[in-house]
Length: 169
Image (tube, rainbow, N blue to C red; front, side, top):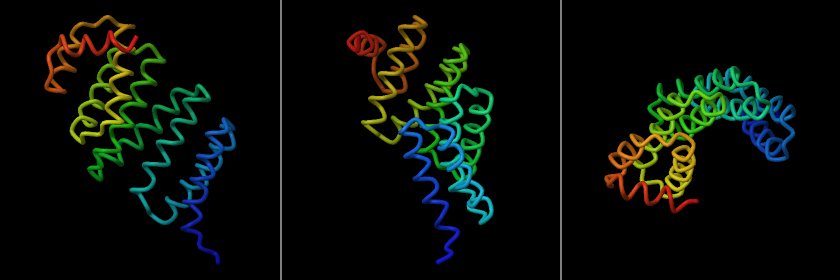
């Protein structure tokens, strides 16, 4: 039926399948085809999701600079459209990337932005993921200031946060 615009969604989904199968080169190609169509049709809002996924693929392929650039493009669009909910997962991925690159101050900043947004939306599932990740990050850094910052974001005490962090071992 020559519905080129709808092909973008199908390419994106096929990219997700290839990504789950760990065929990252195929995933990159499929996501890129989806992105090209979204750009062709001027669908800027939807581009953010595909940039994000391309960033995850680049991260898996250990192309960290490209991953950072792609995540930043996704984040720029999410900010442009005030899509705060999706910003959380992009901040989370930027944090993982920064941590992998041993930029711990930057990772901390991104993880806390993720947590703040996730808490704002009362996303219990996302909060669980963010907090387990922060518990691991705390074990790595032993940064006690993290406890008070997380406590403030969650309207809890530093002792409650520390108790949670140590219970995830």
